[in-house]
Length: 352
Image (cartoon, rainbow, N blue to C red; front, side, top):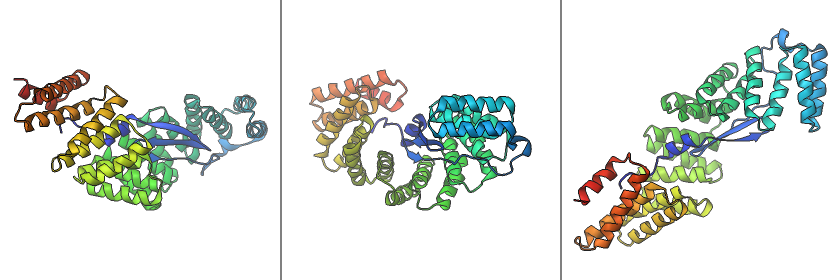
């Protein structure tokens, strides 16, 4: 079909989201849920010059007590006072960063975690959480560096491997992402997020059978989320298993209807309709549902246009209404996205 919807990896790279967890931020992809949370506290190899207590330590303890009671403003003031007394006191910087993170002030959290990471390079939590904040702020290339520094301290940390793979994947550097994604699965073969992530990377590399195997294993250990259903459907489609693709998408639209999901369902029905004409009406109906959800979703216009062109051709080129409808859909699609050579070729061929 002319100009299909963006691949699942394209969707993933555009849709980094974040949500707070107890001591970190979960980084999620549309094409693979990646959860990375770390406990707070001092990492290994602490420098005595940065971990000493004294008056700064006493004030930090008071700040931590205030934070535990939910008195975040008071805690921030106390942490700031401790840092004023001893600017190299990592525990105070980490405590301040945690409050900023919980408040959703990720820019401030990034600065505080970054300061702690610079003061104490062997502090895993500082390096890792700095990477998380950079990732949430979409400073992905910088996040890569922070995750690598964290892994130098704890090479077998699942979340750090998982999120480093994610960051490389978002940058389109799949060869670099792959070893970290594979290691995540080796570290915990029952972790569905790790399986889903590895499958997404395999899919981006064109290793579709391996991608499907990972998605199927993920489905055995995690909830059938919209992300997993989307990836499963794409994998079935790439392997031309259109009946399974359609069945998966029917479940997806029940759980999370969207323009993309309806368009993909239309595509699967279109492919099945090449051997079963009755499926064409179903394909058209799903393209229409996609456009009802988002009138500017141009892949659905392309799908609708190609279906109508086929109906015109099957009428021995007598159904001119079908042809006009097809050309109108394709013209509207080009207006929305001019960079579609295959659609332009169709328009050129059939408007003569």
